[in-house]
Length: 126
Image (tube, rainbow, N blue to C red; front, side, top):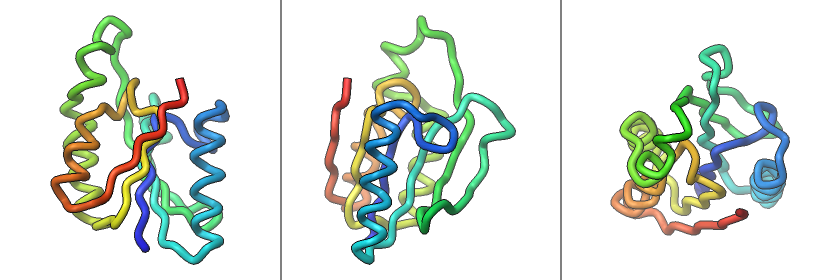
């Protein structure tokens, strides 16, 4: 099964609780034989790379904005939406599992994933 995990933060770029949970879920799914990819947001251009860690393909893209925009951009972030749409179209996941997407990725990513036919799961850590 193809699984795409969305998480505002993900190792090695962040080490918080939700990031650690998303990483452990991804590793567990890889060990069960699933094809796992992750989309995460980073604040620095130098971290905006595609890499593979423990068999997990990680797509990191740069997105950063002032805190005053969080309420609006958590619902629809145009930068994130374009990136997510490209990756979901490329990966074609069966399942999208989102973890804490309210800061940078945005809830619009759930709609995008559903429109591509993926089953969508949201784990809210906060």
